[in-house]
Figure 1: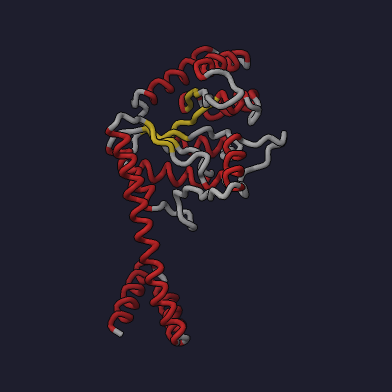
Figure 2: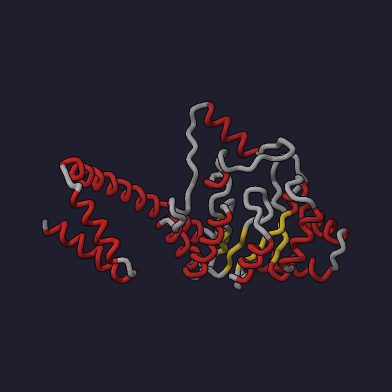
Amino acid sequence: MKGLAASALEALAAARALGCEAEVYEDIGKTLEQADAALLSRLVEGTHTHAARRADEMRATYELALAVEIAAREGARIVWLPTVDAENESPSRRPADPQGKRPVWAALQEDLQRTGVPWEPVRVVDGNGKPLPQLREVLRVVARHQMVLATGHLSRDEIFTVVEEAKAAGVQCVVVTHPDFPTQRLSVEDQRRLARAGAWLERCFGSAHSGKISWEELAEIIRAVGAAHSFLSSDLRQVHVPPVEDGLPLLADRLLALGFQEEPIRAMVENTVRIARLEGQR
């Protein structure tokens, strides 16, 4: 009984601080009124299940943070959060391509699943959208080694959570990976908010070249958000695309043809260099 009393007192103290003590008191009372052997069994078994889950989470947290730590000591400069293995890229959430095209990695994942290889998304937030311990530990390592953090293929809400957590952890350079990509597709206002929060917006040749966004729309978004907050990237090295080294010149040529002056293009290229040199603090 002392254990139950301690749990009730702790819960009520926390509820009092949040201004909802009466509601929590009533909820605890109803739970105790319904208490029986089944509830006791659920408490006991649930505690063991929760403890095992927490042990797995802490093990995963240690392993991920250690991997980033080793990579940093080996000279790695950029940490990408989940890309093709992001929960946002799961088949049920991936938007249909109007041209019927599927990403190369999607076809690979589906083929592996057909052969019996399981696929589980790599999550960075829990079911309530709160940062997982693994994410917080990775962010601490990224901040300590002054690395660049890229948001990968996370969803809109995940991106906002990560940018906020990264800045709070002391990460100085945060890149929002291709915000115009179909599985991100951030609005102009969202991109402006992220820029105000201190994040860089990546403008990819690959997205427009593959038809995932029109060149005209990409140009409009850059103008609306601002070249000062953007940097140019090729996002190439996939099959059936130009060589990586051609990406930036081709992107610059396209922007010139769409009416951009040389100055904003040069500014975005210089931003690319600053980020690559770990000088992209904002």
